[in-house]
Length: 125
Image 1: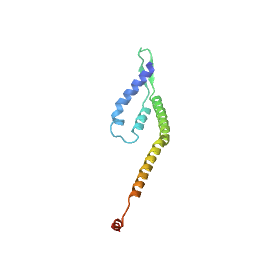
Image 2: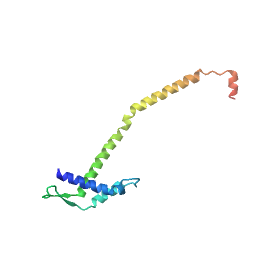
Image 3: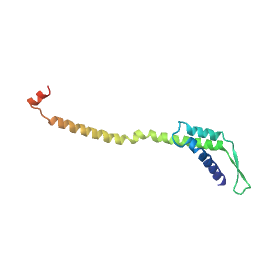
Image 4: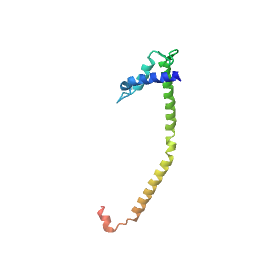
């Protein structure tokens, strides 16, 4: 409702004002953490509601906590997905191994069919 819309707008503005400093172009490792630190150090803000009779308190500390929790959830999901990669690649590895074995067998058959005469053998010595 009105509260979540106000929080969203505040966070969007906070982010937009700092995009160039923390997110655009090449950045040093940890710049996103610096952004969160600035968010954590920001004082709460009181905004008027749409009807001007109510006030909404924007709590940057609470917003940062939600962002950190969401980041942890995403990290856990990525970790679980990455743990499954070896299982996902078993079929690919089997196909690759089969093709390598087929090409090795073909090369062995070709080298078995090559015959050398006595004069040919002298050229190797």
